[in-house]
Every structure is written in structure tokens, then in C-alpha cells.
Image 1 (cartoon, rainbow, N blue to C red):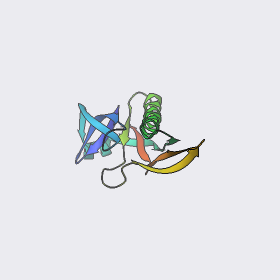
Image 2 (tube, rainbow, N blue to C red; image 1 turned 120 degrees about the vertical axis):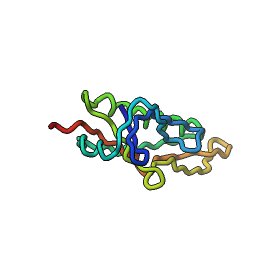
Image 3 (cartoon, rainbow, N blue to C red; image 1 turned 45 degrees about the vertical axis):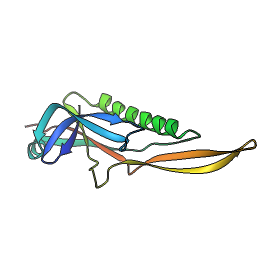
Image 4 (cartoon, helix red, strand yellow; image 1 turned 60 degrees about the horizontal axis):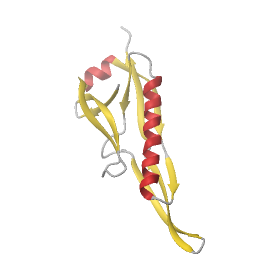
Amino acid sequence: MIAKRYGKRIESVTPDFNAVAMNEIGFRRDNAWSMPADEFEAGYERVSEHNLIAAGEGDTQSEVEADLLARLLADVRKIEAAAADGEMLLVESASGVDYPRLHGTQRMVVVGFENRLYFTYQVDPPLRIAVYRARKS
């Protein structure tokens, strides 16, 4: 399960990575699980932390963005699949503070006798995801 902090609560979310959205890297609440943040901090301990980055380049902007986001989502799914029973992922990147975004540049390249645009994108800052498990009593 993947969760994210919303105010004073930790709630379950599903990844929503979409190259045509205003915020390409997003998580949508699914209302499957919720817990007050102070109870979560008292009852769970951090096992590991992952800083996910991705980059891509190519001559079609939408394809570069979509491929980059697909690889980032695959990395999130790998971490989720590797988590043991009872462990959960917590998105620690905070909106408005250090939330990841796609940053890109474009430049002209000459292919044959034509000028073409070439796009380079990367995720910055990294998407921070930590793995937590329930504390042993």
C-alpha cells in the first residue's frame, strides 16, 4: 500500500502519473485506509528511504515525458512489490516544499537538412518514498 500525508492524517493513495496533466507526478486518495499522523508516527518505524529520479530525451516532447513517467511509476511499483507483508510506502515529498516536477529544455538540432527540436527532461527534486512497518510492542 502507498500512503501520503494530508494535513494531520496519513491516507492511502494510488499513483497518477500523467504527462498531459498540470502536475505530472501525482497521487490520488483512494479512501481505502486512513490514520491520524500522530498515531502513525507512534506506531510505525522507517525501514528505508528511496529517492527516485528519472530522465529522458528525444525528439517528441509528449513521448519523452510519457516514457520518463512510465519509468518512474515502474520504480515505485518495484519498491511496492519488494515491501514485505505489513510494510507500507509513504510519499515523503511535500506539496509546495520539495514536490517533484518535470523540468525540461529544448534545443535545435540539424538532422539532414532540417532543423528539429530535441527535448531533454528530468525529475527534480527526487520523489522521496520511505518504507515503514509497524513497531514491535
